[in-house]
Every structure is written in structure tokens, then in C-alpha cells.
Length: 160
Image 1 (cartoon, helix red, strand yellow):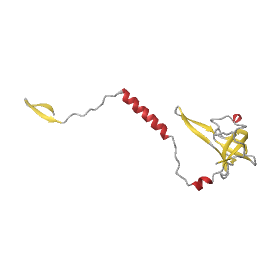
Image 2: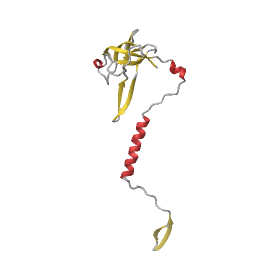
Image 3: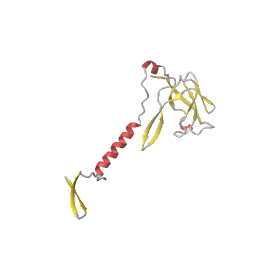
Image 4: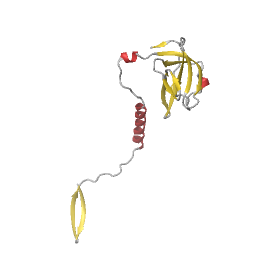
């Protein structure tokens, strides 16, 4: 129990009060470091984006094929878009991809890439894209890095 002393009209009076609460707790550096590390690991784990579950027949509709990049150039009206000409063995396709911030066009010519080839054509900044290139992202030092998935499989190979 705690007592509080009050003085009124030259009389001393004692009153019982509750235990005082601590307004500012002492910070333990080791405990704080552990907590910050745990929060950083949790933040890294939260980066994983999970899309809704789909049925196998839905996934089976996706056609993934290997193609060889025969030509690649920057889109004349967009900073982030690259315009690819890709040879899939039985056909040539134009695919646009927003990876210009990560790759120079000349370093991609001759690479064997994986693409989704049964998407409906889509206009992007005035040019038609007939597919989608498969890329992966990862966090490095808090910065998102993108990697175009390449393979040594021959052009025209069906993936999956």
C-alpha cells in the first residue's frame, strides 16, 4: 500500500492510494534489437503475394512456350516498355514487357525466354502485345529486383 500525505488547516491527514503506474519504461537495447530483427523478418515474409487458389483445369488453360529473342528495342513512347520480336519456332510474335528499367535491349537478343502465348492480344501505348514474358521478383536490401526467366531449352518447347 502507498500513502499520500495531505496537510489541511494544520492537520495532517494520510490517504491510501493505488500503486502508481510507470509512465516511461526503461528500454532494454538487446530486447529492442531482437524486436526490430523480428519485425524485419516479418516484413520480408509479407512480401510474398498469394493470389486466390484456382482449379487445375484453369491452370491447364495457360500455354507456356520457349522462344528466342530475335530483336529487342525500347518503345519509342514509353520509358519502361521494351518491344520484343520472339521466334517460337513455328511463328514470330511481338511481345511488349515493362522491364526496361532492369535490362538493356541489346543484352536480351539471343536469349531463350519463357512466355505465355495464349493471352488475347493487348494494345500498349499504340503497339500490340501478343503474349507475356515470365519474370520473377525478389527483395535485395529493401529494393525490388526483377529477373527475366531464361532457359537453355530449344525454341518452341512447351513448358508444363
